Image 1 (cartoon, rainbow, N blue to C red):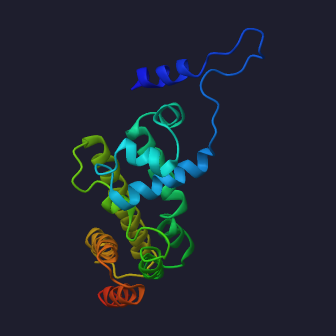
Image 2: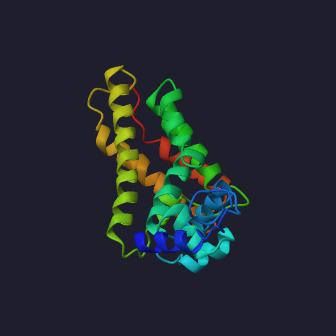
Image 3: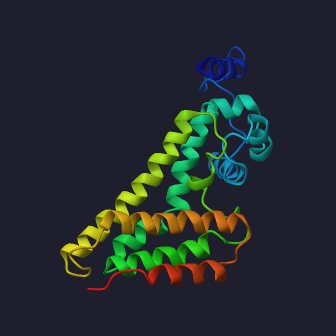
Length: 216
């Protein structure tokens, strides 16, 4: 794909003799952050595999040479989208784990906020990290999202283990199983949001999920 970038740069580098020197490549006539957000929405709605480069250029309102010059190839763009998604839309879980005084309170908040985030109006429902690799034939993309999901469950397990050590939870608590239960709930809530479940319906699921939590 580097050849495509080079070609895009060469096409736009024809400065006239005597003109002030400027960086090679087409001058960007678009706002990069805005274009990236539009790409994020396209991938979030359709998934990685189903979103073509022409879909992206149409959504981002830029030409293919500009896309390649600014973001690299489709996979590089998607990797950047995943970073932005994690910081902008997917960080509620990390905040809950960091800010709540107990593991139980952290998971309860995480599930409640997932119900709100996954059904927020004006954007695709569910979680991009859960759904974007559906029917994906690109192993690197599947692995990128799998690693993110597994990292989320590992963070849950670490927080639960800390809760056991602090006496918040019984000493015989199966932290790994409890973390996977919470992760399965979040992933399931994401799918149900995609299928049309309301915030209130997902909040009811979250409330039921917390009834299985052991008490010290």
